[in-house]
Image (cartoon, rainbow, N blue to C red; front, side, top):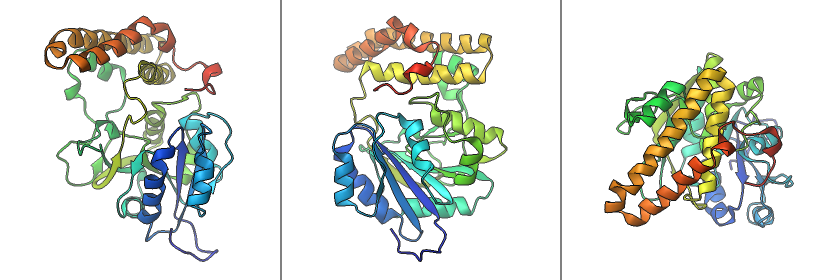
Length: 319
């Protein structure tokens, strides 16, 4: 991190919430420090799993502010906790399984400063294979869009960053894996809604930022490597948590009838994916078909766990 005089304003606070990510922290935090050259900033870290990450970060990166562990807070509440101690003009949410390679953070800060109408900014995430991380930009989650997905017409949804995009443009949702938000706006909106224990909290934040009249921008030339799903991506429980986050969003932002239709579309989509896994995919990739089929079947059989969204009493349970 760049050296700065004590009275010099802090431009960015990088927030990292860890959960069993010890093996990623060397590359993530080391890369983040190098990536902040040219801006004044700080890095704040909290571990939600007690896997030794706090001790490692304190010893390996003494400039990082490590907050005491407070249990498994979840992604949204963990970032809210860090943000209350942050001092930067911008907050940069960074997943511990992302790897900045050069000056991505500094460039994103400068990009946001050049776009004062933007409340949230992001770059483009790519997977370790080099493929685009399609989850890094998404259309806004809505009932009609979920119906299109269930009908196999998800490609007609608009609002994500086109794969061929070469220049900055407005988008509807940016992943919380690499998301820069103006701190004053964050505080105005109250940060993440802690009803979302994990998944879809950034969709909700982007919705509220847009509702507040601010824009969401992405610069595809700012590229971050994201080891997405490194923690057992095929775990059926993780699929349930994602669906629970989506259902929570529907119940929060839409009336009872529309929320029911949205959740029904989620259910139909899982049923269609199950049929696909057991027919065409089984002929081409049997192992993948079995994994996908098990995830979809688990989601269908455990509809009661996700249909009504995150119960308040489950917010602080281990995920």
